[in-house]
Image (cartoon, rainbow, N blue to C red; front, side, top):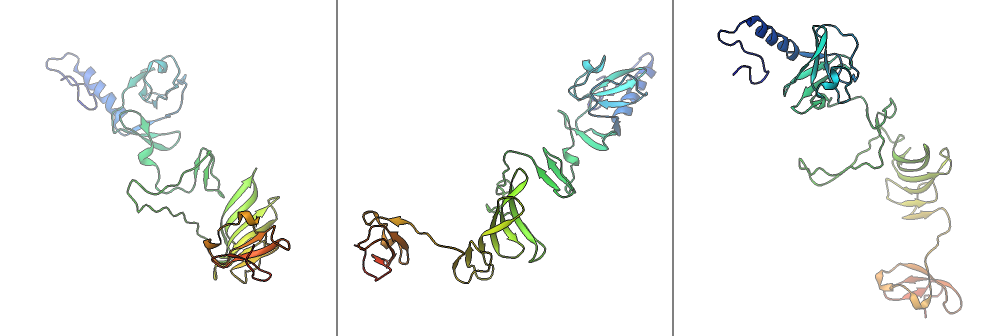
Length: 283
């Protein structure tokens, strides 16, 4: 064996002449591989001037008289007036001077995956995050799914938490960055669906009272009964020949368009449809 198996450091052989050459070459490799620090991992153009001992990780787009002939991911060491190629080894960690980041060579390429923070003050995916939108995602679709790997329980609950009753926890839908619909707890603990035509003025479409579960439609006031409408109610209209099954449930209300004596509202008693005017069976 003429070199070490991991770092490929050259061994001094028995009766070797000029042993200092081998020793110096081993020292040179150690200087590169131990506590590796590179100038850049993204610079593509071979610099016209570099300082002795400067080290670079070569990107796939590397260009230059010597860099172009080197393998992407290799270390380019400036030594004795020119660049020489040094192969990294699996598990090697390098500090990158122009970004202040650490990279790990995993045997195939350099990655920052082991050094990514578990907590970050902001994250942008395909977009820039801001102080207001600390998490920003630019994509045609996003998937949130239950945990099938750990594995989890099979449930998938997404939580939006607000500080107090008068604050907002909601999902806002926009058109060209202007709000058009909002679902959530907007200024109270009632569940509200509200809409807007201009992004400035919103009106409640549906409000479900947190304390009672009562529903208001078309009005912003708290509902006073199970279903509180802010306008007229329109029910389905049927001809006598095509009435739905009254047995589906007592209490249904429909409009019968061709009842004798004229159109009339009818309700189901669980067996038959009866006119609301006189409780007679629709015939």
